Image (cartoon, rainbow, N blue to C red; front, top):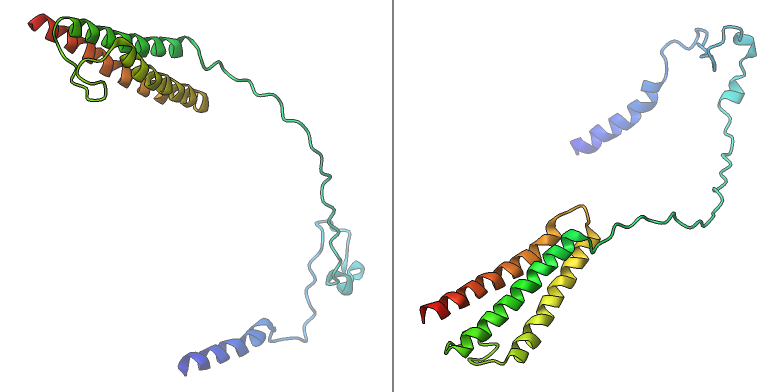
Length: 174
């Protein structure tokens, strides 16, 4: 109840607050420009408060081709070196595994089986390597300023390099 009463009182006080207490004084007229030559006799109060429609015309629509983007080469020297490292480490892992298999060792990866052929290892591993290189190419093309594209080939290449070193260490210990 108090809230409504306060609201009504506030609503009724707005028209009173806008009126000046002394309306008999001459109204002050603000000039519409900074020129001192205009006087009170040039001012038309009716024209000051008349509403004029705003004419809006939309800008003309024109379709223009965008300027050609300069694209930096994706397969540059750094990409080819990363790809060469990954593929070389993969081939080193496969060949060291085959060398170990020929010297009495066995494969521990369950995907290949205990005595996989060279064709089976290349047939499984190389498509995965190609997919990682495709991801690397996509990452480098989408964000050429970033170096995050180097992560997949370096991780996969390092894993295969470590596996190749492990294979050679196992063969030497036998």
